[in-house]
Amino acid sequence: MIKSLKTLNHDLSDPTYQLDVLNNYSESLRQQPKFKEKLEEIDLFPLRPTGIEIFQMNVGYMCNMTCKHCHVDAGPDRDEIMTKETFEQCLEALRNSDATTVDLTGGAPEMNPHFRWFVEQVSELGKDIIVRSNLTILTTAPKYQELPEFFAEHGVEVTCSLPFYNKSRTDRQRGEGTYDRSIKALKKLNEIGYGKEGTGLELNLVYNPTGAFLPGGQESLEKEFKRQLDRKHDIVFNNLFTITNLPISRYLNFLLESDNLDEYMDRLITSFNPAAAKGVMCRDTISVGWDGTLYDCDFNQMLEMPVEDEAPKHISEWNEEKLNDRNIKINQHCFGCTAGDGSSCGGATT
Amino acid sequence: MSDSYYNPKDLKKFEDVGEFGPELAEKFFDYYGAVFEEGALSAREKALIALAVSHTVQCPYCIDAYTTESLEKGASEEQMMEAVHVASAIRGGSSLVHGIQMMNKTKDLSM
Image (cartoon, rainbow over all chains, first blue to last red):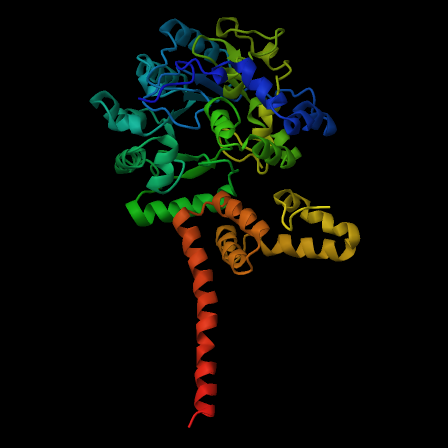
């Protein structure tokens, strides 16, 4: 089993060290403009929320996979899991929130023992629900194999990872056998109507580049994925979301080990797009950690950068007005969301 | 003075060629940008064509640039290698087809 950076006690499991690497690892990185300076140039600093539309919950870092690019450093050896008490606090916050969408992520969110109960509760609140599935979990134990029907019953949008339309590149990033198991899960989702026109059951794929390069045009990649998956496997889906790999955690480890860090950061920074900066997801999203701590986004969560001190810091202190009045915390990793066409959990932002 | 003809860092300075002639450089880069936009051919197909041509003209800058571009636009390793083989086939074929000229000349000269 591949171990997480945390279990290995790797230097990069320390968020402070990660931020130090991004800012000071080489002469080239020290000389790069700071994200704050780029925001100041376009009058966007301090970065402020536009409201909370998406309530994103990281329900635990436990996962059945250990992908090479994972910004969470998730894996079977991670035991941080959201408790029922924290879920209940999230429900209470949601009852008092304008957020339209509850976005469930992890790890593999399905592995949290309270997952189904929580989906049922949110469904009753009338909020849209997104589950970020790694697909392979849906091919493991019977209790997970039943999930597609459960998702359909509750109108859950399934957004799942598939970094490429072929086996070699998918397996290199996500582990041997991932592609075949992902195809099996996608076929099952298609069988019950997911991704098919007129069913209302939304099936979206997430594309992460399988190396030290940026995602190309989302529309063009979506066309190619649709063509290839239809031709090879008779699989259909709704949208492809292109997501830029942020230079943190395991992906940062890959960049360092492959000697691509300077070049990758330079690419992100020279591709800074003011329009993408205006549309960054942290402006309309709040991220809830497995222990209820509030963050501006899932990446800040992994870097242990909670919302600023003046804002409520825990889900039990939920106050949307105060959260909407906060300054969003930033650092050099944020260039990942503002490069080129922009990047968010919903794909390109421009 | 540089001690080699090719420096990978020069690729990023491509647009600096405008320093010695801005008007033509501007026209060239406008044209260049337009050529690679999504059109009747997709941006991915254009990147693969550019990758093949890069091998034909044996430009190391272009090979680096269009390998990255092809990956970013969603080309697979198999597609990229097939593109290089297309370049190779045309280069090889263009030599070989001249063999006909050699044969014609030989026949003209021979008894």
